[in-house]
Length: 490
Image 1: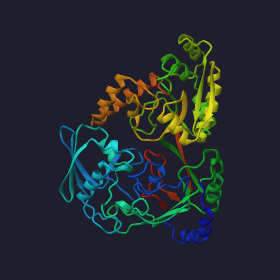
Image 2 (image 1 turned 60 degrees about the vertical axis):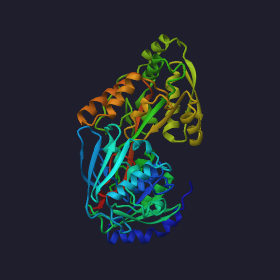
Image 3 (image 1 turned 180 degrees about the vertical axis):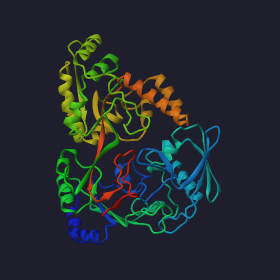
Image 4 (image 1 turned 30 degrees about the vertical axis):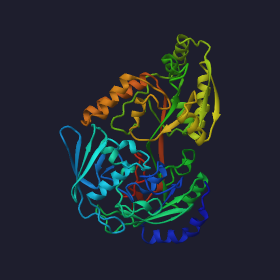
């Protein structure tokens, strides 16, 4: 995608002058331009990077530790059977066009999500809502048809932000929410500009203006940072971070994302339906070599599909430690003493193609000969995700708390374990946090022991920011680049 960065550079001197005179504005470089600005109508992460918790808010919100916090709902109660949630809404909230937020807007939002013509990317999260009742302007109840342990988290996703009937149809291009920042303009191919919303109901923000500048090229981002044309970026290319490390004008923030990078395995297809084969592959994986080669050392090793920053995470990386002798022995036990040949389909992202080359070399040491097949995203989605026509692939799963995919035997990697499916059903029906953590750890352990996929590393978030900026999120537990705490210091 071509970016008209020259337009931005033409304004850089003026913007820099304003920033020096009154450091209350920020210009942030982001790699991808969103296809639209309505997070309830599109799945692209680039949408939430701009609008989540900035323009739009939900009943709850997810904080930088991945925990649920009050949002437009100041409090809630849950019935003893776990099926009815009663939300008390904040008073005095307005949308950016001046219209009042109340319980009718909540009902409208979820009726719209659940409607027959809904284009919500994750409607399935909200289909258990059986009824929504407006009790009074500041009270709304939701009744579920079964208990959902993560319901409050799901209400904090970008898919569930509250929209108004007066403006919902235009949110794709002119978003109007209740957040601390209001949409000003979108120069397609160049930038989106937001300004602080004066009548915002919550804590005042520090910034008066934020500009998201679309720059896809690493060299261009580097030059823009060094020249002061942008003030930071939340996810800079790891291979170029050395330019900024040790430079007192910048701070490098390295954290984790929700991107669990896996060697996805077709569990329904021989020889990968054989546990010993999957265990052999797990023993043949040297995570450190992959992380050093594919992420320049910034990835975090994982042994199951959970992010290390998640409160439910357990370190299972030693379930099958790197051990070539053990891998060869397991292949022999499985009936493949000389190994076998397979294909590895790689989507067009650097972490996948670099990891693929390293894994092919590692697997060759135990006799598994991989043919690397580079595919574009459209072909990957058709071949791998939809048609399940693959042996192995490498991809990062970036959705928070998506371990439930492993309970779906029709999901693309075809894992079918009735014990695990029952466990996830129990987890989904549990609201007690201590019990949920216990069940989540048990679920991770089953997946690690079954070597369902090759668990490689968590994608790092590698931000580069002006050293005088504070309040940026180090980790990325949910899609978004939240502005509310960002401020300039002297």
